[in-house]
Length: 406
Ligand SMILES: [Zn+2]
Ligand SMILES: [Zn+2]
Image 1 (cartoon, rainbow, N blue to C red):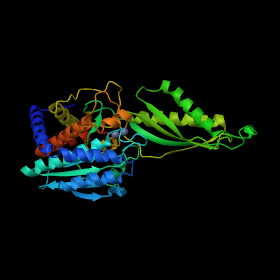
Image 2: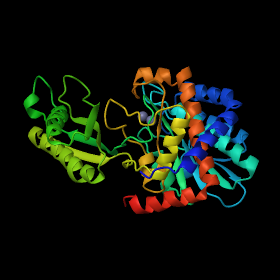
Image 3: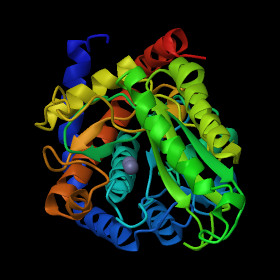
Image 4: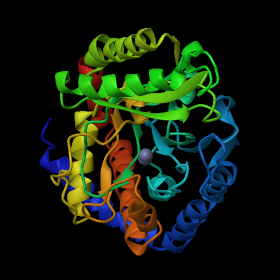
């Protein structure tokens, strides 16, 4: 990581104070936005009210909104150009919830922080007429569907110089390893038969699934500890007195190392499935059902800005999560392979873990509101500093070209 120059650090600290002042009049509207999106609790690709609500807020702040970009009804692009020239800065808003446990990843806070940041940066830059092109991308379906992958494929990042967002967590951090992730669906096909009268004529597809899961469990001992393999059975048979003819599993395979993921983990998991099929006399079919997520690459220039911003907010960016070495996977990882990117974390409740019922509760609490507003101040400050100092954008791009993986 390149050390932030004292000048840059001072600039960030100064802009955090400006951003907080600018945000204070917006806070009630932003808290309403956060709580409404929380209440909608819409799942991936069905975030109709959430997307419309965030887009309407940005429209009210002078952004030109185009809904339904990249062939996704719940995606949007909101743009505010200030002057001509200047950097193009993309701010991502997520707003999808999780099945069964609602906003347990706090994406309502991501939407609020992103929209608040864009509004605040727009107001500050317009007041001084510093050129900048602010683009807010409403990105659906981070939880599995890969909305950002579709935005990339549709060209929404063309012309973008840097992309930023912030995620709520149980800690403050500039960066945590986000794992590359492959999403598989495996199907075992057997032969139905009476489970008591003629079991010997059947071939049990649930046995295939069971052996597959057992094989994965044994495989783990031979894997790097940063690997993650986890599955659920999505079809497990239809009637207890019929030998299951077909079973399906949803499987995620993850690693921070892209080549390890593709060259070691994926073949090993597929061998487990093939072995299970062979042993049970069933047939295996498999496919990748969702876009793969790439490991996150932190841009050092953006990381330095975020670290200084967190400190200026009275937070501790060095605070690492005591619970482990990864923070799951994100489609922001894919963005980070296309443009210089930032995916830091703001603490809601220290030690809290996402995808839990406790985190869902925190995402609508005062602590959640504070995290969203601090996240907005952080992203606004970064956008304003980059617009005021385009040389930092050039440096971020230079390091991206040097360091980014193909
Ligand atoms: Zn999330
Ligand atoms: Zn999540």
